[in-house]
Length: 406
Image 1 (spheres, rainbow, N blue to C red):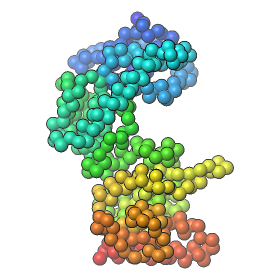
Image 2 (image 1 turned 135 degrees about the vertical axis):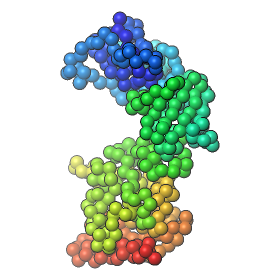
Image 3 (image 1 turned 45 degrees about the vertical axis):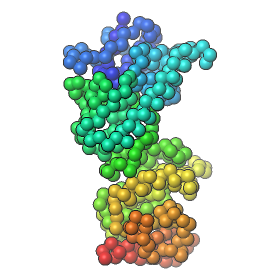
Image 4 (image 1 turned 120 degrees about the horizontal axis):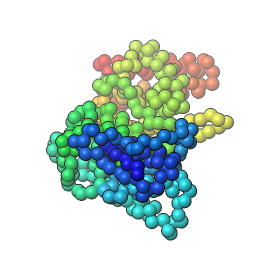
């Protein structure tokens, strides 16, 4: 009879690998013994015994719908005593093509109930962490059942800005020492990458205003799926630059190349921006560059991704990220590149031609300056117009340099 030994209660990677092997050998759920290795037992190997060989081609073609694996991960972080068997049965029947009708689907109904329970427990746990005024080394979560606290260790780490923390659980302990996670009593090293994913997106329930480290904000933003743009773009493109920069530039949104590479202002407009910065005597390494929205909005035309202007909903969805960047960078001067950035920051309609090149005081007391977006220069119809507008843009950047030097 096959036995699968998991390194710890959340060893999803070992469970997944063993499940794939066993299903490819058509092993029934009732034939398998699942065990969690005792922390003091270092002699027992983790994994499937006896080992079973799997053809490389069969392993490569084995596939399970992502929606099912998401359900399985939610089930795995509950305290249900049969969660390992139930999760295996869900995958086995999918591969065999024997999933029963909805009315007769006892396993599916139970799994969905457990997944809902995991979501509710996750929401409660995150609210507890976000609202807690307990010192980071004295956190506590007393609710019984399940492993949602452990699955949300990354959430806690980001909420506390990567600083060390320690949390007592009802019958366990977890601790982040600033570089790695430890679980159990006594504490053992644990790899969060082996855990099931949390039942909710990482950003849900996060108190962004409480985060005091820019890298933690950036890491949280990478999981944001609040607006529709996030579901179509390749990745979140967060700001970059000096964390204490006196000069901050805010554009509209990432473009096609930024979306693919994951950095702001690296496409044609970004290259022109870099050239203008250099001509104005400003080192890009010494400024902070970001966008009002953090995902690329586009439509497809003949195989090309064409830029679409960000709408009010996208701007509103991304506002917490821009607010966090402004709060943590605390620039002396914020330059708004284009009407979208200016309208979002000034909270009113902006006509660039009327307001560019004139310093204004922003709501937080920071000095602001409105100018065109570099892409405006690329859209000029003639070489003469491009040259003229480029020089005006450089002059605005020189003005920015003088303002922070004053």
